[in-house]
Amino acid sequence: MNKYMLTFWNSAAHEADFAELSPEAIQAEIMKWQNWMGTMAAQGKFVSTDALMPIGKTVSTSKHIITDGPFTEGKEIIGGYAIVQATDLDDAVELAKGCPIFETEGRVEVRQIQDFD
Image (cartoon, rainbow, N blue to C red; front, side, top):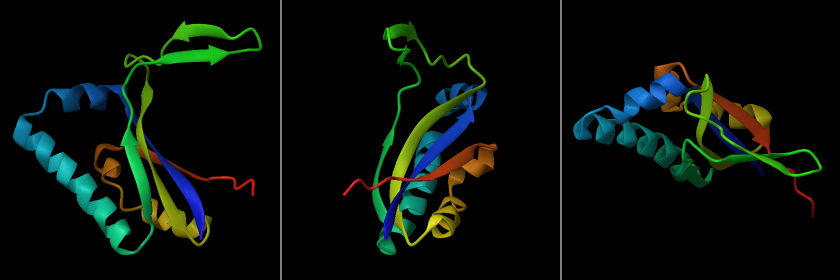
């Protein structure tokens, strides 16, 4: 089995709308994600996950120029990621298809984690 990173992209507008939900609606959304990840865990394919804060810093060029960002005012933001185990890229894509982010027209980027051993 190989490891794959599923990166969760959504519109900044959706992230702002999420912050305005009632506590009950937030809990319902969280449950959708927990159920999806629980399904992968039951298959022995779930490794880990984390959410990301909407702001940070960007370091670029060989001079290590540091700028503010990414910004929630941007068009899209990465809200988090999951690490899964899958037999191949197609298997990882099948796992990604169950992600609740598609209910809000988000997207999931699926990439294999390179093994240097």
